[in-house]
Length: 569
Image (cartoon, rainbow, N blue to C red; front, side, top):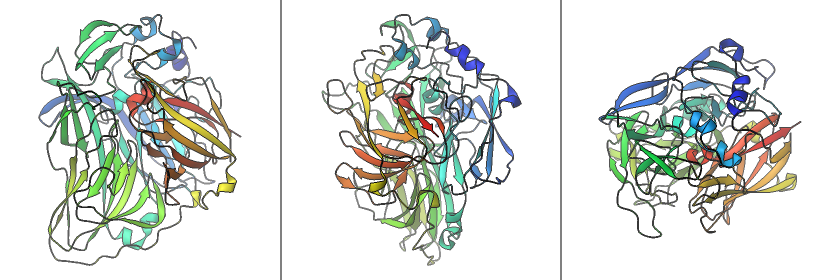
C-alpha cells in the first residue's frame, strides 16, 4: 500500500453526516430502539490541578458521559468531529526512505478519529464498512468537520457489566486517549437485579492519565498536540522533528511519547489526584526511569455506614499504567472482570502493607473490575490505593485514588452468595473442544531497525502493524487456545509486561505462568507479565469480519504492536 494514497483511500470510504450511519446489524431478533447519543469531539481549555490545559474531549468533559444500554437493545452514537484540521503533509511526503511498514506506524492525522466500544461483543466496527471481510479495508476515519452515526445491536445473551469507549484510529489513538477522550459504558441486566447488589450504593470510578507539554508560544498553557514527526525522548526530556533516519532536524516544544511526559496528571472521574514530572536525573544502569511523583488530592470520598455494602465499578482508562489495587482494611468481594461476572463473589482479603503482587485485583490498562465492599464496623477513613509497581518501562509510584469514610449508625447489609450465570460464555470451554493452538509474542526492539522516527520497533510475532495484512484467519464458531508472551531478554527486546486486548470476543484466562487461574475468569484485556506466558481460550461467536488484537499500552499499539484477524463464516 502506498503511503501517499492512504489518506485518499480513507476519505473515499468516509462520506458526510447522516449517510455515514452504520447498518444496525442485529445480535437479537427484536432489538429495542434507542435515542442517539451525540458525542462532539472538540478542544476545550480548562484548569486541572492549577494548570491551564487545552485538551481534546468528548462533549467538553473528561471523562466523557457514562453511557448505558442493555442486551437486545440498540446503542446509537454519533461522533461529530469539531477538531481543526491537522497538517500531516510531512507524514505523507516528508519521510522518504522510511520502510513502508514503519511509515504506517509513525503517529499521524492526530485530529482524525473514530469510535471503539471496548469489550462489547458486537459487530466488528473498526474498518469501513462495518462488518467488512475485505482484507484491504481501511480503518474508519472521521476527519475534522465530518460526523458518523454508529448503530450497534447487543446480542440477547450479552454479559451485563462495565465497558468503555474511546477512539481507535491508527496513528492518532494515543494522543487522543492521553488527552482524555474516553468514557464508561454500562450494560445493565441480570446482575443488577441480584437483591443484595440492587440494594447497594453504586459508584463508577474512571481512572485516566493525561500527558502534557508546556507551549513555547503561549507559556502557561499545557497540551498534548505535537507536530507531525515530532518525537519526545524520555532520556533527554526534549522533543525534535525527526527525519526518516531518526536524525534530529529541529527542536520543538512537544512530541509523541512512548514513555514519560514533562507533566502527567492522573485523574479519577476527572479530578486530578496525582502528578508526575520528568526526572532530569538519568537512571542508573539496569534501572527504570523514575518520574518525580506527588499526590495532589486523595480523590473522591464515599461515605458508608458500618456494615453498609457498596458496589464499585472501576475502569483503568490509562494509556500506560498498570494498577495493582487494594482497598485498605476490607475484604474485596470481586464480582466481575471486564464486564463478565463470576457465578459467585470471590473474596480477596486485604494484606496490610501490601506490595506489588499482593494486590486484591490487578487492572491492566483498558481493564475493568467490579467489586463489593462491606464497610468495616470500625469508623474511619480507608483508602483505595494503587500499589507501587515496576512491571513497565517507567516505575509507577503508589497512588491514593479514592477514600471510603465510615461513620454513622451501624447496619448489617447482606452480601450475595451467588450471581447469575453469564449465558454467552457458559458452559465454559472444555480442553477437548480446542481445535487450534497459537503463539502470540509482543516484540520490541531498541534501538529501532525499521521505525527510526519513533526510535523503537513495536510489533507482534515479528511484524509491525499493516492495515491491509491479515496474518490470522479463524472460522466462526472455532475454539482456540492462545499462548501470549513478550520477546524476553533478547538484545534490545522487551523488558516490560504488556496488556493483551482482542476485539469482539471475550476469552477465558487459563493460566499465568505455571499458575492455573480460577475457572470462569473471563477478560477482553489481560496483563501479560514480562517473561511470563499467559494461556487463554476463546470461542469466536456470532460475528464475522475484520478485527484487531493488540497491546493496550496505547503508544505501543499506535506504533505497531497490533495485528488484524479475519473472522470467516
